[in-house]
Length: 507
Image 1 (cartoon, rainbow, N blue to C red):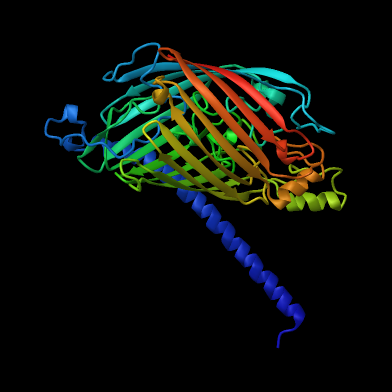
Image 2 (tube, rainbow, N blue to C red):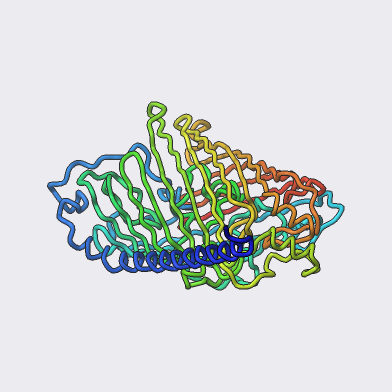
């Protein structure tokens, strides 16, 4: 019979072996992922060059079958929904693309009830701010199946309270670090290739993120470079466009989707996307920032990275009304703090206040899930809804401080009131924190967005409505109003009313 001491020693030895095995498997997986990414970069273009003539667009291949159209085209990229309405015309046949966008948002709020506030609070005094985002889109379609896209951007101005104090922040255009300034930067630099898996083709809308006018119905798409995960994952044609529709972070995106990005919302990585007539499946491996809400990336994949996978289903549930379901999962690996450990450090007197950054260099895991649905109701109205959840023990690191989110809404086009290019919408979102996260804020901890010094917890609830009117060619003007209950989950503060006007120009 082993003694208690010998059992304890053998148990510790087994645990050490398990830890060593886990570390080896993790390192091996990281190297395997890196190898697959670089293999894809090297091999995929060669496969494309070997495609048969039947893989070419119908215009280049007289023997190709007639084009077919899928039940519902994927939603256009954020801000490009009005591609047919531009100040300057754009060629449908040129291998080159150049266009631009100007987006100005003037937003503010009156004074509201606030018995106290902290360093990361929404300021209780009235304030107004002007933000601007200027984007230049360029592209070169090098063949019938490959293209290069390069976009430049300048984000200037400031948001109310410098983007602090709301989990569902009111303006998606705001850069969360105002010290970066309006200096132009590369927003996207993408190599995009399409491998045809069928001869049937469908029409595609030419836009800044894809210059192809037709695509194989069944295909495999490869992207590599700098891009935003929100361009391709968790998109929603009724609720993903901050330039013509809603402005709130947790309505335009799933608030619980802590997607990999730098401060400006972009990352570097590789993405595979398989598309068929009634479904699609996409996967991306991307870089994470070195610190929460940081601008610099961690390039060592053993220390930090993000995996994202999404299944998109396009069933015909309602006659002539195409439904879209998207099921999302992601796993982030980064130097993230642990709320429970941080609280324990504070309670034991190791720190004067809870500090989520007070830990040695480490790699922890944060994962989450999302569901996204959009449903045309009539030929002029669509409804949408999202649900998101992530594990709330580890630090909110990239997008916003939300551990659970549910929202729904509807968007209508002006066809019914004889304003064909106008649109309006209304949406409701309810955001929540995990028990560990809320306890951290209650004790005076600061997140990268939130921190009132203490917390009287309640779900953050936001209602947003907008009306966008078409002025001339690619010029649009919008009115927007948001009502926020329990800003930053604090029922001791608020409510807050946030009106805004927006000018959007599509060049």
